[in-house]
Length: 53
Image (tube, rainbow, N blue to C red; front, side, top):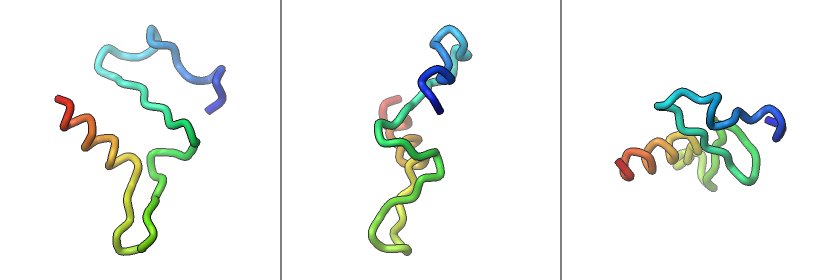
């Protein structure tokens, strides 16, 4: 997304939380040094959210 296309807080539904990464990518971004131990950015964000609630 370009900065001008990121929605404002007023444009989001009450139950929507916008999460932006500083290094780009997308929710399906895969990281990890071993294919059988892949880490998915979206999954990590969900776990962080669940732990905080």
